[in-house]
Length: 274
Ligand SMILES: C[S@@+](CC[C@H](N)C(=O)[O-])C[C@H]1O[C@@H](n2cnc3c(N)ncnc32)[C@H](O)[C@@H]1O
Image 1 (cartoon, rainbow, N blue to C red):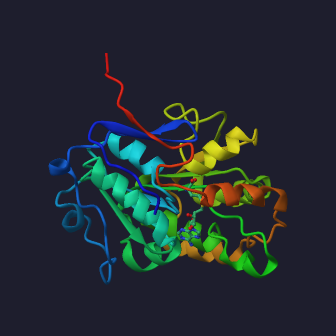
Image 2 (cartoon, rainbow, N blue to C red):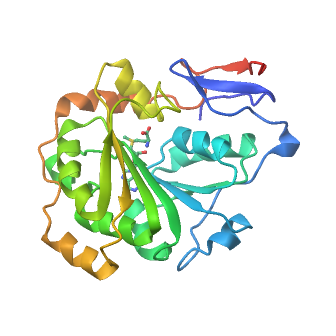
């Protein structure tokens, strides 16, 4: 992991965009790592030590989007998951050093999390930013956004719960926009999210800096669909077998580059708020 001096009062940047939050003095750091997802369904109140609406970020990467939300909404609890241990380490460090006791981070696949560990109707929002399109033919089966996955998202959400999704991949978006309305009252958002115009995530910042279009939207879980109907509908819908545009692959390399505070990232003192 790249060296990063956690100086209290400093903010981090990547690609010239500040990572939300300020490093706290060590005595205020939180403990946000979830070393192992508990067996069975997660008891949210036990996990966070309080009763609050729960938000999950699936494929959270280095945690930027969830840090933004957790700071803006201290009244919500947030779980970020990713299959890559290294990105969860970065995200956990950032949550800890910002004293964000309303965050937890864990290494686990999104489908496994929802299928095995999340009770039906227990989560207020699920976010998924830039799920990997997986370019190679033999990896197509790893694509996260499938009808089955969306039926699990639908099942996990409370009544009126929200699903937020975003990608820079036109082929994936074309597929998503066909099947999302089956499970959600879906609306496409034009332009960036107003609270993060330079990019809500690391991947969005990289894609925007290359002039790529970003596709984003949100949906409310359809109330006219019960879990059983959602599952049987999912079985009848097509799988994401689109042909991925390999030109976008170059961005993956940049995304995997340093996430820990070097390169274009740096410490600098927090600006005083006026
Ligand atoms: C393109 S990156 C986007 C990361 C972050 N959301 C962003 O926008 O910067 C996709 C992330 O999804 C993770 N991922 C891939 N498959 C996953 C799965 N089945 N469950 C959870 N995370 C997954 C990858 O490890 C990677 O960190």
